[in-house]
Length: 91
Ligand SMILES: [Zn+2]
Image 1 (tube, rainbow, N blue to C red):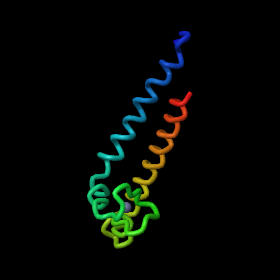
Image 2 (image 1 turned 30 degrees about the vertical axis):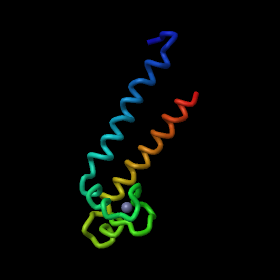
Image 3 (image 1 turned 135 degrees about the horizontal axis):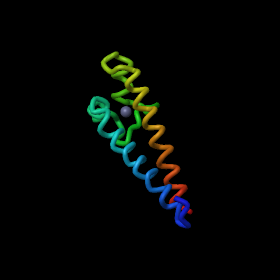
Image 4 (image 1 turned 120 degrees about the horizontal axis):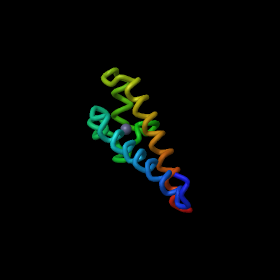
């Protein structure tokens, strides 16, 4: 794969991978999505936001805190992927 345009060939699978992350966050946590409907903010990340229904559920024990942690981990990785994607795109 030592073509002059090799960079494009290397970047393409990466983009596909990021796309999978996007799908995983929105489809992999239907319970958190459902709880998130009751959050004060529509774009709530369920981190430190006030009146967050997901955090409340984790505190009340109706949502497994480990599950919320997994959601945040995936969210962070997705954020990082989006940032990397933006940096690559601006070049
Ligand atoms: Zn929330």
